[in-house]
Length: 128
Image (cartoon, rainbow, N blue to C red; front, side, top):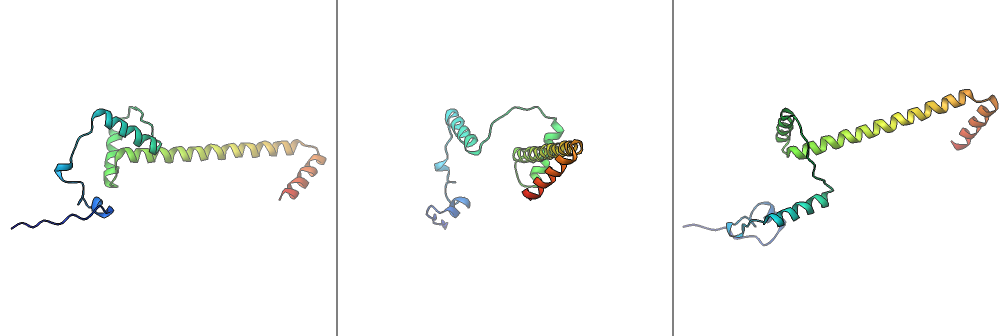
């Protein structure tokens, strides 16, 4: 005697647990055109742009191993690594530029006449 588990009506948990949508009777295959449209929609909604890049096989293998250990896809890991790198580089560039501006201001102050130095200190005190 076989018993069947009754299907749970369309709850989110039922979908997540595979109780709904996993019957072979409901399996289908998208046409290439529909699949391309789906990928385009996913890319647009996530703000992604497909690119082509040549990387060393060892680098890809390393990303795949790290991604597997962390339970994620290697392309997702690569995207995160590139994003972190770009953010850090942008911060570094901004901080370097700020240092250059500060140094330039210090040089201008040192070259200014005593009256202008006094005026600049007065403006700084007012601004603070």
